[in-house]
Length: 168
Image 1 (cartoon, rainbow, N blue to C red):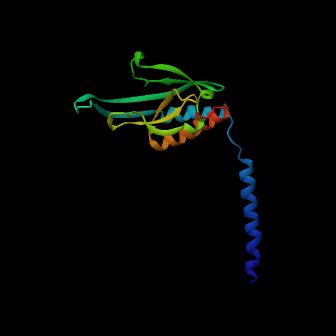
Image 2: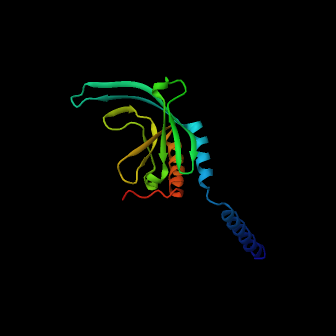
Image 3: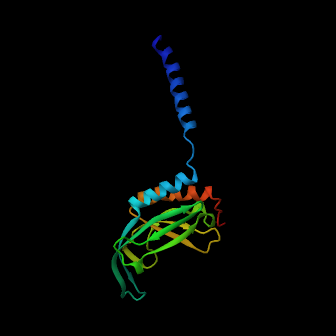
């Protein structure tokens, strides 16, 4: 019975330490989040697509293998400049796009496939996010569904910090 008396203070001390640690861990700022996203895309921002698309009558329309890449060139508050294209792609297949996080719905960020519709095969991985006016979708290629899940959470967090609104 005497040994059990010491268990309560030990458990209380552990609970107190866990509570202090949880309180000290604050949410990442916008700058920290976009810096993390840039570094993460540098490591995981590509997907291999090996797919084919058939016409309604079953004939093969397109078949191919392509790697799609993305990186964040810069971030300026709530606008990210995303570079699409791999380093070895010809310049005409590369380009920069501006992504204004205020115009997107944070709850729509999700892991998905890079291709959809009538495509079959390895459709690649991507993170997708819907604009808040429900008129556009942004897809960012990423190397795995697990990586896409992590990046989607960061993208949703950055969009929330920028004041992105729900589409509905």
